[in-house]
Image (cartoon, rainbow, N blue to C red; front, side, top):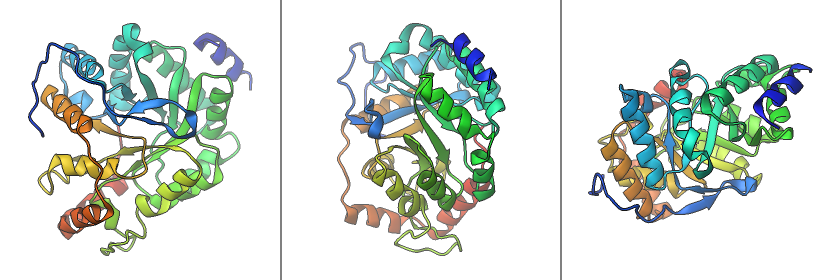
Amino acid sequence: MNRRQFLGTLSAGMLASPLFATERPKGLPVRTLGRTGIKVPILGFGSGSRFLMYQAEDKAIEALNRAIDLGITYIDTAHSYGDGKSEQRVGQVMATRRKEVTLATKIAARTADGARRQIELSLKRLNTDQLDVLHIHALKNMADLAAIEAPGGVLEALYEARERKVTRAIGITCHADPAALQAALERHDFDCTQMALNAGLASITDDMKIAPAGSASFERLALPVATRKHMGVIAMKVFGQEHLVGAAAPEKLLAYALSLPVSLASVGMPQLELIERNATLARTFTSLSLRERNRLVDSIEAGRKHAMHHFFRDHEDV
């Protein structure tokens, strides 16, 4: 079913690496995106605020093409990023490279009708008739979940899109409230989910105390539900939106997230050098033991963790 048919139906109801290698390097390690069966590289290209840091459109398109050349073929964007600029940029690359990538976008609407309109526009911007992954964007809290799952809520439109094969998989993303995401994953039939997973958030509790067990973290609350239900898990915010820069080596921060039961980590890369570096890190990734992960968590200063927790609780991904 193409885009036009869909609309009509729904409306009725830092390691050193060469910067510009001339040869295509070895592909990245691949994992399965949960029960979807889709094979994805362990590193995804985040197309949010960091992608929009490429001021010139030709530079942004060059960066995305380079990422795909390096094997970073999971592309993560959203309807709201840059008021549509991100999807439009990605769409220019998809015009010739759609078959090479796993394409994911996110819908911010909370009503079914609003979501249908956003899905139609996203498909148009992205130059495609089918998505691989379609997420509900940025679950905020339990009140937000109530709106999502209410009659006439966005969840209805996602189920319809999957049933009519406008998307292969549906999911929900969250960086603000682990308990709300846990509830969403328990209650509903999602194929995948995207959540904030990093060494700084792992040990923050709701009362802002440091707890080594991470009793109120995404890692402790939401991730086990996703794993038990065989959902694909996309880690995001692995560098803490820069809050963890300088707190640990980039390779350790990325390795921390990839050592969890996730399919991949989606990372924003606002410079070609970072694309090259992160591709090398993914290509040479070695899993951290539980002891190594705990040691990394303990090494991050408490004030930095508190600041990051407050930031993500109120942060808007636009």
